[in-house]
Image (cartoon, rainbow, N blue to C red; front, top):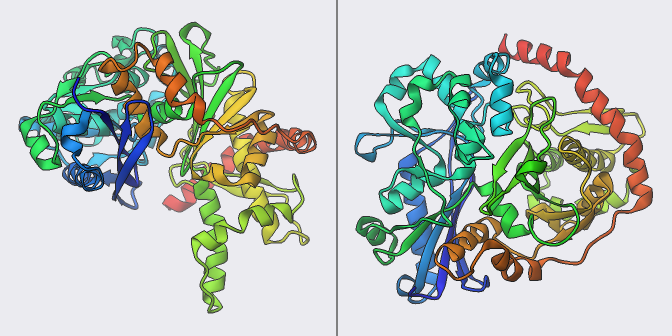
Length: 517
């Protein structure tokens, strides 16, 4: 091994980051480039493959400007990225149109048809994953019906990180995490022909790439990629797992005692707990994800909210719009800084808010593309602070809804994401789930998780447990115990939250029909 730095690339929905770490996990520098995607009235959300690679190169170049001698000092590069979605590549590794992102809702009708099929439960039992519009399987099935010629021109169906890995190494591949929860079996980490048949894609089997495990296999950086990124040709490149589990790994989903869980509180909400394969709880509703960890015999069981802090952004933007109409400007940062004050000045548990603000509906712990956000229980006495509190409490109750679908509530909750900096929000989440909360000081958990895989791949650590002990555990903050009185309030409120979201299904369907009309 040559070099004393590891580079982690994390290509998210809104930004691409390149982060340099030393061999014991200290973050040296980071660089980022804003990411862009296009959306349409038909529910489409697409992204240019060529632009995404160009932005990745720009982030690596920017990192090189911050770290002297980066090219010669880099021992290994690792890449992770946003999950789900469909990135089609054709002859000569040329993109076949723009990528469908996880935000794309065009496969809703296809999902509705597939979930009533005779093989859907067998598909769920193998993958551990409920079908939704985000996933490549449902998107490919939708494409096969809508535009089969598009798939005829494609030679391989990749995910975002796979596309970047192809540009870095020239190798078409995917990782065990996305391969198994979409098309395979989480127990074997291989493709499963029953799953592919259940999706109606047996005749498209050739589009699925080779599965490689980045903790065991690396490929060298090509001359072309090295020249573009300002790095050294031949540097090993590690294909990380999907960003959800990389962030969870970097933030602490593994390690410690008790029933530990990890939630990413960002634009979306991702709620995860690490389990041995034989302890996975597959719910009767057939929802959630089971995603392989880069640790033999262990997986993450996952439920994901389509929108989390996007709900807070929405309620704050309402205030900003009113102030602007009255001739006053208030920045988003100013309003975010007021959230803890509004929480302190309002009474808990008065209003039910369902945080389904995304135009793609909800996917955890239930799947409904028509689901929408709403308040229940408003009265003349309620003011803006009460609405803000209701939105934040809705996030806590939605998190509880997700963890309850995976079994018992966890004893410890480790938080990642910018919203975790709010003491008021942490208090609500802790009380809603009855879990002590710990926050990781790790700034870039997703890039760190990928770099941890790379560190194991090149032999810096003998296994992931040894890496976790040095990269993760020392950065966890003290445990913040739930407030018993607040927890009792949410115990009383949660049944109303859960019952209302079940009873609202016909209303959501009627509103969706009205929008289409």
